[in-house]
Amino acid sequence: MKVKGLWIASLVLAALMALIGALALARLPEGARLVTHWAADGTPNGTMPAHRALFVAPALVALLGTLFAALPRIEPLQERMAQSAPVLRVAWVALLLLLALTFAKVAGPVFGIDLPVSLISVGVGALLVALGNVLPKSRPGFFVGIRTPWTLTDSENWIATHRLGARTFIVAGLVVIAGALLPIPAALHARLVISATLLAALVPAVYSWWFWHRRKAQG
Image (cartoon, rainbow, N blue to C red):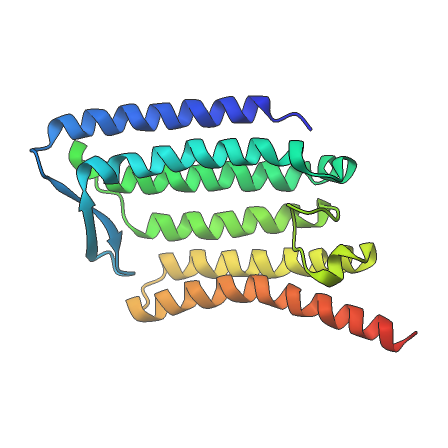
């Protein structure tokens, strides 16, 4: 599985974000703090010193890019990792774009750009939908996919679980996006995001056990 191009792109993105962070820091007075956390309704409820807030995301982009690039090299099941390449690539790109979006929300006000916090929720929903679309293409492995004791030991269980997971991830993503765009109370929106994300992962995990239990009962 070739990942060099994506790895280089990740490092370039991290460098670009760091450059923007340095330009933003130069505009701010010494000791300035930036908002790094918001309530569901967009109200700021957390800050961080600017010199940290502006460089956390670039560092994470570089770190995650390097981690994703290393996974194919340390996966013992190389052939299956190659088959799961679409899932790895989508997760890689989507996570880095989500980090870049979060960075834009943090750094934007320094340049007079204030993005709505709902964009981050939309990004999370889009990530879930994108993963759902490629989950059925994955094959049993140690680093990619819905890995439970039952999916890892039975390829039929893996396939059935990931087909269900595709649906739960897509539905959860659409629910998160709708919650971000519809005028609903902030407390309800927060519960909606957390519940949808947890259910997207927990339902397939429980199903993988049920699938194993049913096959065992059938002999």
